[in-house]
Length: 208
Image 1 (tube, rainbow, N blue to C red):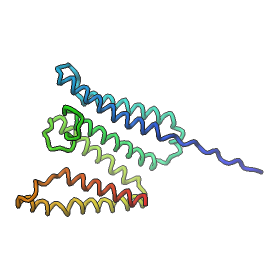
Image 2 (tube, rainbow, N blue to C red):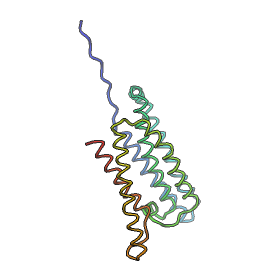
Image 3 (cartoon, rainbow, N blue to C red):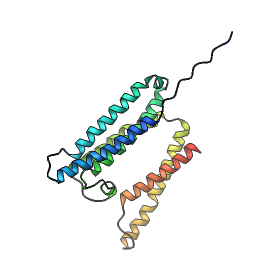
Image 4 (cartoon, one colour):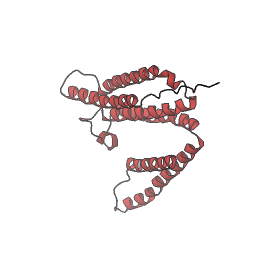
């Protein structure tokens, strides 16, 4: 008796999720810039945060529709795998939303409002702080629960490397500044140094 091989399920394309995510980010930026320009011209337009939020909801609805359409494929995934990729998508969208909110009070969509030291309005500052703290408070524990042992080791060692890249330069920079030999310590510059060291070490250990 011949056993028929099990029919392999067709994997869904990753093109549409990528298109939806980047289109949402792009349109959020367009909406923020357009509404800011209208308000500066004296027009009665809603805030950039409102426009970007509506676009974000539209992108979330498009992603939900796509996932429901290919739901039969995702049903074969374990709960751990769903949570893992859910954390990844949520982190990308959180980063996009943070960038748009940070730029919503600027004249254009430059990166200076995100990485610079300029003043922010209380509303934008509170929103950014809430997005960062609440977003990480939710995503980090979920991520740590769903990763396997190999990824956990990469995650922990990358964290240690980023700690060294943050802790080693600070005392040296601080004493040099006190002697007038260096500018004031830039916390965000050190943060991004630690972040990119963390990312590089994590990717190398995970995929080597």
